[in-house]
Amino acid sequence: MTDEPNLEPFDEAEYRRRQRSRANMMAWMLGALAILFFFITIAKMQIFA
Amino acid sequence: MAQSLTHGETALPADWRDLFALTKPRVMSLVVFTALCGLLAAPGEVHPVLAFSSILAIALGAGASGALNQWYEAGLDAKMKRTAGRPLPAGRLDRQTALQFGVGLAAFSLFLMLFASNWQATLLLLASILFYVFVYTMWLKPRTPQNIVIGGAAGAFPPLIGWVAATGSIAPLPVLLFLLIFLWTPPHFWALALFVRSDYAAAGIPMMPVVAGEKSTRRQILFYAIIMAIGAIAPWPLGYTGALYGWTAVILSAIFVLLSIQVGTRRTGEGDTMQPEKRLFAYSIAYLFILFGAVVADHWWPL
Image (cartoon, rainbow over all chains, first blue to last red; front, side, top):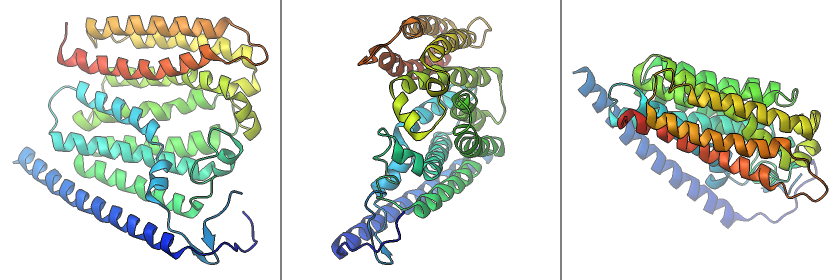
């Protein structure tokens, strides 16, 4: 690791692209998990009914 | 250090592909497959949703272990050609993000396993993550050439966890499958270590070829291959599997031992392309996939 300041130009478009890409990915994963947890609950209700 | 994607105080958010690469997807595929086989070979029926969720939890746990391994070994990875392109040594990701990702994923995998399966499987999953990160990565790997031998236990957990997720208890067959992966790990990794020996030496990792030399490593590959073959065939005469698995194990293990004899008895000179070692490494992966597939096939369609 270096302490020297990084003088590269800050690429805001790339920053936004990555932020958007991660936000989209997170939204899809949370949606998928909500569905998965719903089905797990249904499955457990069927087993223990 | 490689070029960092930062500007002043503002770091670029990690690309999700780099986070995915942290989970060592190729290793995960073998983990998922062996866990699935352990689950499918277990007696009784598991609800498909719960089976899927348990396997997902095991995959996420393995991914978390991989991420924490890469977080801890970022410095070592930078010194090895084979691993220098990984997200951390290449500077595409910062260590703090990798640590948070690994710990978060581990916690979530345990929660999912507990929710979808049982506490016994959750405890085993926790043990496998802790063993891989603390015992193998942090303690054994930088200290002893036996790192792979003892550390192999971490990779041997998945079929056991899969079985316990399905049944809630441990039985002799999954223990034998655990033993099979445990004994398979040394010849598999030492075959790799023979042809990337200079990489390990450069990073200062005491792998067997670096510490004990090539000749000793070759002898030990052969020794472990023979023990592994006995372990692989054992479930058949012990009555835990049928002839379908038995004959598959006999034939595949015989080929494994033959390839190991080739590796174990040869000497290399300058400029050797290490073809027999590469062949053994590639075969060892296929061997495990087919053998575990045979465990399931034997359970469902016994001869």
